[in-house]
Image (cartoon, rainbow, N blue to C red):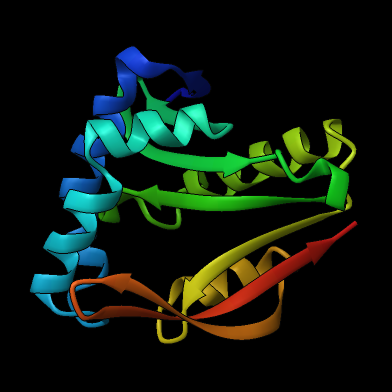
Length: 165
């Protein structure tokens, strides 16, 4: 099976929305409520929200296996003046976890960050999300804890993880 990772633009942002609708209800079913999942998908993964991300300097990658979208990442290297980039999103279809797709997306983000002269990569991950282990294996460590009010009575209770090179 061939794996391709490529940058997408505005016309393909719907791929991120479609993948999120498949991934989030499974990935977060034991972490946050279905109501919060719906709220976050509607506010963070609508075409309008993703277009605003693009305008703010986010880059979106799609991972395709034999031409079929199976995962995505969203990151921002707009922070190069502070020597860091931020991984905002990295998700892979649950049925292909542990196949190397997430690692390939992660490595693509790290490579792009290094190319922009960043010295660190940061991300936020829910404190009870099993993905913490994936990031830990990639060399990331917990730098701090933070709670973010995301509206509608919901919060994100996260670790801020960091990778230095």
